[in-house]
Image 1 (cartoon, rainbow, N blue to C red):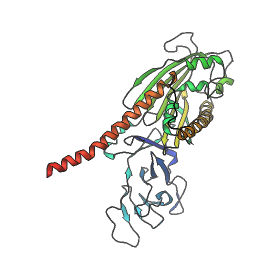
Image 2 (cartoon, rainbow, N blue to C red):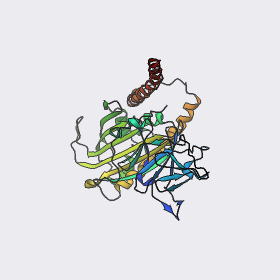
Image 3 (cartoon, rainbow, N blue to C red):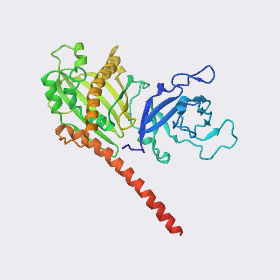
Image 4 (cartoon, rainbow, N blue to C red):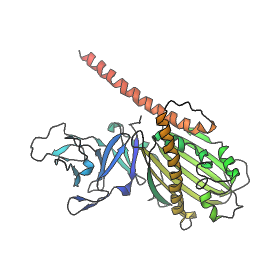
Length: 373
């Protein structure tokens, strides 16, 4: 169901604090519980600021370590007091001198980048930091980026398909990201994107020409003004979606890159992290370049994403219920499924490769044993 050898987003860096008040009492953010790709994980910062990620499951009776407490670099289970180091090894069992060698938790590689916290859910030996997706975070000096998040009760494949198809802006987001006029609907439903595919990502580029500005920005411009909207999207498995979105005064051209005056230059970085088959955590941001921003624009962009993604959530959660009810329901494909189909093929290829590797391992072990007989 989930690609394991991949970096998954565990949240914004400010979710993970050093908070530790009144001795060992934990403040908000000291221990953070996540469920990522079906695995329960507890994350915390060590005194040096580095984040540790361990399986959120004590080796004694599977008590939740996220209900425990930090002690320096360590974390203590507050059910019977077992203490674990950041490497996952138990280093104290109160009332018992002997510590079994199997008293060890799974430790996950963690990297902080672009204000996001990334956790590698597969084989630690294969944790390649070059696979961490590009993003623009709120600490970037050139961009005034604002952040948010929400949880969606839907499968992550539905989220992937939704993000890979922006023609739905003409229908789902008429009052936010899209427009409620026929011209905008026609332009969005007849776009001709350019796709570039890699082993882990899909880049999609297109321009929506000569349209009114998105509904949520309409109050800022004269109603007769027309714009060219330039979309440059990189969508990466398991599910990170980064858009460089630029707005130009319409130049009257039928194709090519917009050459009219640049009105807004923005980045939105979005990450969908599956908890399990039925829910995802969604971390996202939007912000404008400081060189062309006016006061309040980035806040307006972020607030609009909250509204727009609430619209998406309503659609996707209802869709998820129906897919779960009738998984074999005969559906059709339409022209707007091109992007989703490409992205899901990339995901399925990686899933198939991992399944093949997993199947090959027992055969390799058997062959190795046979050679020693």
